[in-house]
Image 1 (cartoon, rainbow, N blue to C red):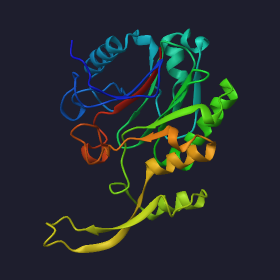
Image 2: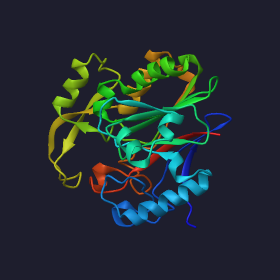
Image 3: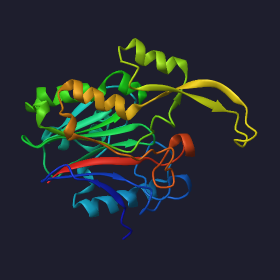
Image 4: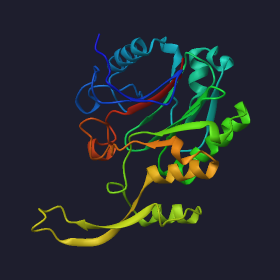
Length: 274
């Protein structure tokens, strides 16, 4: 069986945390090779075989590999035994329009799907609870990561100081050019713009020696936005790791919607309590 190649995160004993790469799967073209997202146009049989390969690697059954249908909002679902007992159709409805999952059930892999957006994993190593978060720019503006830390405290009694966090592969500052309306959305939401934004000059697409310099455009640092949210929520800075991978610049190894188009594969970033 083809085996997906994973980027593994050392969050601690008793937990498996990872992001998938593009390698080691059955999908083809802009979905190649490893994609398990059913909402981006990939072949269903390829997705099934990729899920089967990942479940085999993780040592879990297919019904214990959960990924929501994300919509760039802040709905957070607790994955407990009651949800796991739901029929397949009902469970799918419960995971519709959801951008973060959390659980304290061992043997269940929860994860999120990204291709430039920022995946974030949280692990409460004291109470053994985990959370997987999808933070696109809209979710980041709405502070989904900060809300997820607060939700873990409500559900499990998590103390933020006990959380170990990983920010996974996503688009970085130099590559994430945005319109003024996106910059304004962050500013109006009360973000300190100094550490998370910068203007870069544009070029008209010609070779550097012949290009025309166009007006500068704002760029936003999404990984830093989410890191700062966690610090504000009480997570210790030395317990937060930020992946150096920029998906836009490394689209040969990680999916990037800006590079490959919307109809392309997605990275799966998951976490599993052993």
